[in-house]
Length: 263
Image (cartoon, rainbow, N blue to C red; front, side, top):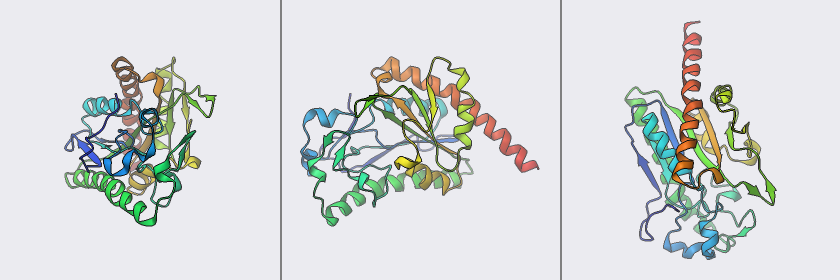
């Protein structure tokens, strides 16, 4: 079911297990399709508000299961990405899109600079602060952090079927993505691909660059096809399969980093 807060809430972000002892920090920028009442539904009908355009169905459920298994903090958005996409910088048109695939977003078509600034201040900045504060607190405790962001994507986009089931995405730093992809043989039944269905040229690696690369953290973005996430059995299976990739990849990277420090 769609996730979200009540219309009276101004909270834009939740932090789950903030003191997790594992090495991973999880982000789920598009965890909710909630549109606060002050935005009057953005002029969307119920179908559009429930669609993949408004959020990443199933992503939060998978991220929660990863958080429990990895004892990882999870920073998750509580506001629809159609209000503000927290995986985009304020200057990007796609941060508050007037159109998402085939869905027109009337409430975003004629935003004034002041209206855009209000969304940046009440949705994007709190999300950024939650991520940076979580990582900083871990650093103060002497904990290493590895950044993993969790997303889902629609199986049909602009009428084209997508065959990829699990996308492993990266920007300039491909170390963790490379390590995960090297473990893909463990899931021979899955169609796993690099930088598909999206890649850096699509503007989807903002969080990786802002919190991962800029902070010197290993980082990767995971995209899951959302027709695999329609129920608890599906999200549970994908979470376990991701752990099959993540665990060995982290161990491999730790070993390589250790060898480099000894050189």
